[in-house]
Image 1 (cartoon, rainbow, N blue to C red):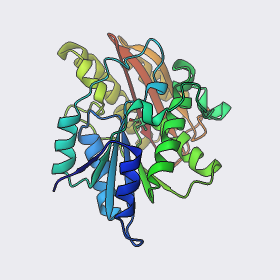
Image 2: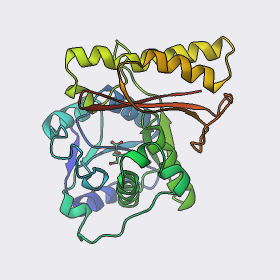
Image 3: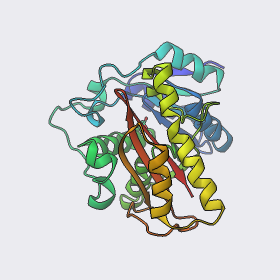
Image 4: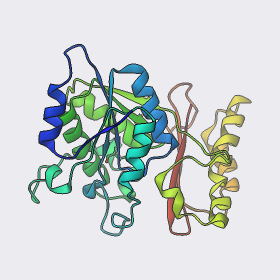
Length: 278
Ligand code: PAF
């Protein structure tokens, strides 16, 4: 199946006029460098909608001045091939000028509690950029459903809030984290890791797995779980490691169906995030 490449907003409007009223659109928003994690979102969208659109846009406003916007992996031809072989109907890949027609632009501010802790504290302005671009994409594409990975837990929670607070007519579908055979959560940034760094990075999924095991054995105290985890994460430059509820408030005791264990750490120059939804 050939995927249609749509690279202007006008072409997107034209594409949408070819759809029938009974059709449904699933949107998979990405920054490209597609991997098996993205493909699992695409599969879910294809199962639930008549049409699947993947957006590919490396969004400059969600990168800080010292982050990897210029180095971020880009390979549109490879991404298009993956989309075609996975049955994607259309790829929307606009230019920066199209998505941000004014340099002095309107931006969204995330809510204070959810938006300025963890990633929001470390990556100043990041969620403002994410929410702004996601709102623009949802507005332009008007999907019935949009698919986001649980790996970016805080992003997912904020996008659920965006949809709820702004009454957006879209269903936000969370999708489980996909892992490599060695357990590392799939991420476009994993290519930055040397083989030695990757071995160190594997302490992250091993720690989350050990915490899951301890919880299954009956441990409910966050302090005890975090102590075990900190031992296991030795050697990594930990940015945060916490056990929280879905509002990202720290929890003393694990709540069934309402707990997330969050970790962010640097291995060499590469920043990795991972989490466990309980
Ligand atoms: O998760 C991502 O790839 C990005 O943050 C998103 C949601 C596509 C917005 O640019």
